[in-house]
Amino acid sequence: MTDARVTYDDVVAARELLADVVVQTPVLHSRILSEAVGGPVHLKCENLQRSGSFKVRGAYVRIARLTDEEKVRGVVAASAGNHAQGVALGAGLVGAKSTVYMPEGAPLPKVAATRAYGADVVFAGHTVDVALEAAKEHAEQTGAVFIHPFDHPDVVAGQGTIGLEIIEQLPEVGTIVIPVGGGGLAAGMALAVKSLRPGVRIVGVQAERAAAFPASLAAGRPVMVEPASTVADGIAVGRPGDLPFELIHYLVDSVVTVTEEELSQALVLMLERGKLVVEPAGVAGVAALLARPHAFEPPVVALLSGGNIDPLLMAKVLRHGLAAAGRYLAFRIRLADRPGALANLLSRLAGLGANVLDVVHERVGVRLHLDEVEVLLQLETKGPGHCEEVLGALRRDGYKLIFG
Image (cartoon, rainbow, N blue to C red):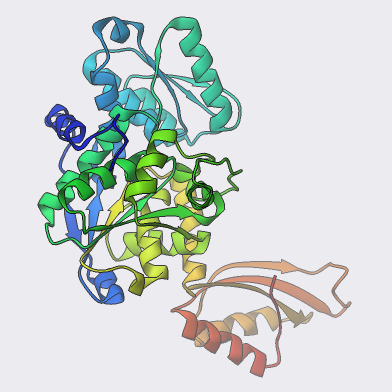
């Protein structure tokens, strides 16, 4: 049923090891998601875990099981975010020195948090792949133990402890929806859950722009894909881990993908209705529920895998999510170049109940006639219906609207 290198007993042992290290995060009922799905939906809030994500579970189990001699040599990892913080915290708890390689341009809050947990941060290259090679070279040169983010039995067992908690907290669960990157989280949770409740359906979710598992599962082996840019950088992994792939291949019922718009809308929903700060990768499961609400058998638990989001990224994702939800509208409009034309337009928008967020007034352009100006407007609206009402009214008034 499973790879012999990781068993249910390993997950149980990992939980005992983590007893005084991690918190048992809450499982919260979501009314709005329950209404969409047509049955109970709960959120497993690993965004409220120590270090802000589930990663500390696997990292600590891996580091705590090192020999005394290995701990003296220290540990090294590569990450742009959650794994970095999990390794730094785990190493600090056992008294081991940690070095984390991060790409240039890594979000400053994540860099600061990793250092605050006691790690030495070294910048290498502009991608996690380059940082990964630098970390491995550091391990070879210094003897430090490389802590893989997902492809190790101890890491998989540590992440699997979340599955044990869910079964205890919601024994009647029918479906568990899990964000998937390299696969360590989904693999460990599927192992734990299926060992206790074989009938529970496990669904993995990847960002459409960085989805290595659908191709790998179709090929029957891990295959490499080139991840495109995605807001869900925490699950943007080009190749599944060998060990996680074997477990997911046998134990996970399906792996689906979600778009950037769906991720953004899910993040907005969690912030606005759930009062929860979650990073884009962490809301992948919620995004899948919103996109295909009737594809999941309730009771459903969606795992919120992390909450470490850069405030600057949050601002961008929120704008994207509001636009996708029809509550943020941007377009250009042609006006006659005469006094009062812009003031009349803004007054009309106010009368329609649209809140003007930004106005850019362009008087010179190859597309414009001598007696025209172009205005770029960004509006806050009340939803898709209100958007159509505003645009329809402007068209009836004779305004020339330009999109794109």
